[in-house]
Amino acid sequence: MRCAALLGLMVLATTASGCTTTSSGEPHPARGNGSQPESPARPRDIRLDDVDPCALVPASDYPEFSLDQPGKPDEGDEDPKCLWMGETGYFSTGLIMSEGVEALFEDRHGEAADTDPVEGFPAYTVTLPDDDNACFVAVDVADGQYLLVQVGLDHAPAENQPSVCDTAHRFAASAMGSLVDGP
View 1 (cartoon, helix red, strand yellow):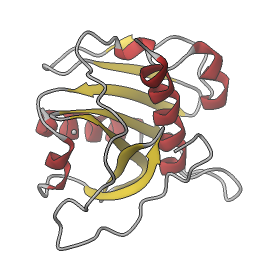
View 2 (spheres, one colour):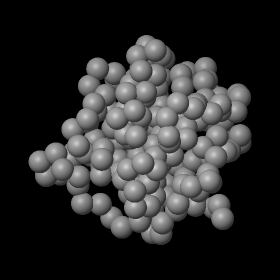
View 3 (cartoon, one colour):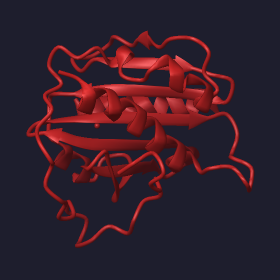
View 4 (tube, helix red, strand yellow):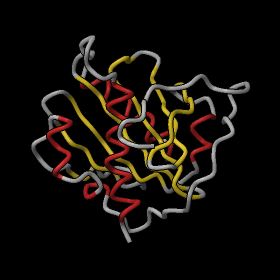
């Protein structure tokens, strides 16, 4: 399952070149006919230029995601990414600076829908049709830029565990906390 989910990340990232911590990360039904839903305005712009994607999630948050090692840069295309491998699966942050978040709604390889804001910034989930154990959360941080988080779990969450999209939403909130509190 990990390989399929990583492939999903690479496919979405290649084609993309795509609240509080208690907010639900579950997607809300898309509005309109497949076009980007109207979203709330960003509270401010946060530019991703010169940001280290591996420095976004603080080590103090690692236990919440069953991580025990720092992320490693994932180099391969123009948008910087970081990948963490953990006991339950993988987590990634991508700094998408080659297009705006509206590109997620261009009928690519996943289903995009709006979700609860992350740190007050508009957010969207993207799920893959053939992978129930992976979820992307995109956070609109500036014109032409967005934070893209992905979580891929090795196994479906147990009934009493948070869903993969809820976990992705919490991981996005952790990363956004660093961006909001940054310079």
